[in-house]
Length: 177
Figure 1: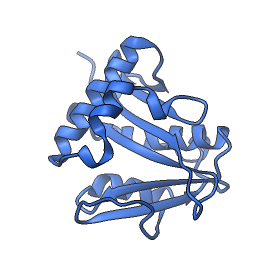
Figure 2 (figure 1 turned 120 degrees about the vertical axis):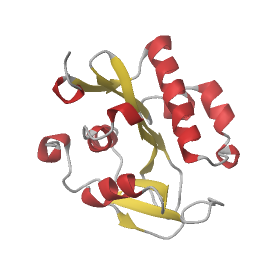
Figure 3 (figure 1 turned 30 degrees about the vertical axis):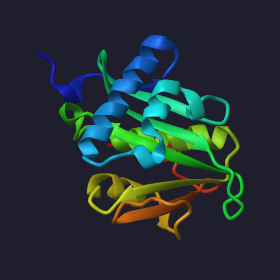
Figure 4 (figure 1 turned 90 degrees about the horizontal axis):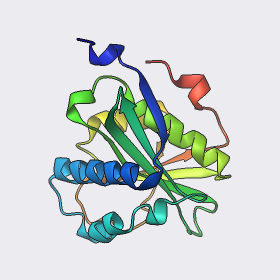
């Protein structure tokens, strides 16, 4: 039997109904893992409309595969904010528990940063929670810095981060595990 770490890992855009279905399952796993109500983000509508606000060319839905198994996901959408012109937002970074420890979070984030640069964005924003230590570690390693609140997240411990996309952190410069 092949170990997880020896299996091929690939990250690719989610295209077609089957892959969008995998993204929907991963988004649901993500939401359950948070143990919070995402109604303030219209999560049910987001699921029903996929790819919706994450559709190209202003958005992206990426799947991480370990072998033939959908193991993780990440999404991007464009933002219209006066205080952050030409920005996009990272959403739904998630790796299934069975696939954690393989560097999927960082690989997904790097691939999304490259997609954002290719789409012409100048900055990427995200919000996270204080207790999401692994994700926050990846964000800080990639150069995200804390910023003031850019939207109303009612959850206690919400943190807001930004990365200037005109700097490094491409998949070529930092994808090693």
